[in-house]
Length: 73
Image (cartoon, rainbow, N blue to C red; front, side, top):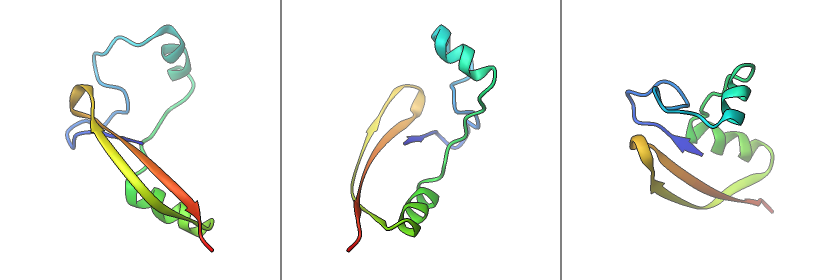
């Protein structure tokens, strides 16, 4: 999942040049970031628990977070 710095409200960094395919998709799609806690809770309602996570800093002050879920028993 993508986590933006608090001052960045948009999913795509303002002023960033987008690849043509992403620019085309943005004409009709309006992506929104899902808060970490909401995703964990939603997955739990479907029987999946978070097992692991790893985060890396990326460009523009953003973080990419990988989450591993496993079916609860």
